[in-house]
Length: 128
Image (tube, rainbow, N blue to C red):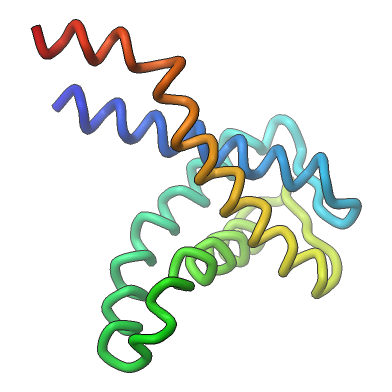
């Protein structure tokens, strides 16, 4: 149970880092600081729900695109989050495409790096 909570927190933090990175790097991508938490939660929920579904569809119909499911899921998460929350805006097709890649890449990187700093000692103590 503790590991599940730790993974959920890590996933939320990693996606928050991805959204912040896109906001910092792209002119057409803006996120209101107050909306960041809400947008991160919505984005993470969409990603968690859509990823298995898109992976299943991809495996059955387009097996060669299975590797790109994470990028498609990120794009879908951004699309739904932008539609639902008022503090996130993405302007222009190139910004949408770059935002998907940046959010995906930085979330992936944060998902690898953050546990080294945040959870390593804490999770090590839980196993003892």
